[in-house]
Image (cartoon, rainbow, N blue to C red; front, side, top):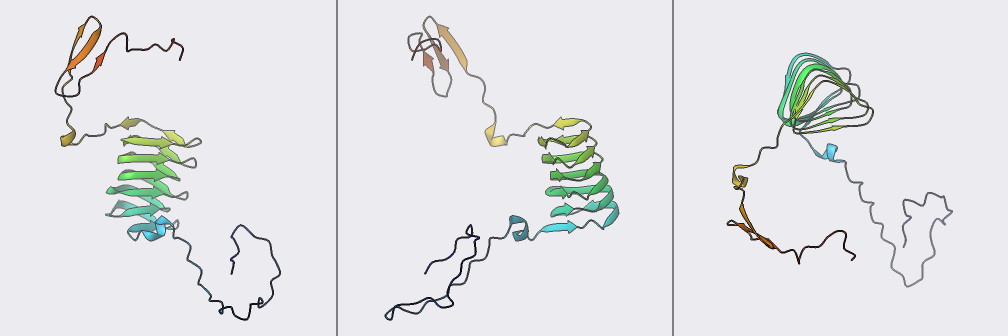
Length: 193
């Protein structure tokens, strides 16, 4: 038995009961698989503030937050993501791990990892983050302070290797791998290949 492909949207006339050979087993119906749910629906720890909600004061939490309403004050979601929807009107200083802005924000934004300004957003204030994405069409007025990515203590920098150069070769003197190059082994980008 065949199933129609989703891309076949044409209507076809099918008989109410297809003819089956006498020795064939009866057809078994198989329930259709559910469509996969978007990642946003699968995650249970995302707060949602709708577009008709107005908050005046401090807003803090320990979960990701989708904010499409109006907030005036401070927003503190230190280790979580804040997504400001297209209807969001924020007059606040924001502190979060990740901040994605679709609406209007007036105030400073401090994100420990990433700030993303979408094309429909308007941000007036200073941004402090490790990474920033500003889409074409986004309005931004303020300063950007990019923080360095902090290295873990196990990845401490090793001192630079001492290099001695003698005629015809260079070798590195260190605990790491040794490198050597001679003029004969070096090619030129001008040489034909």
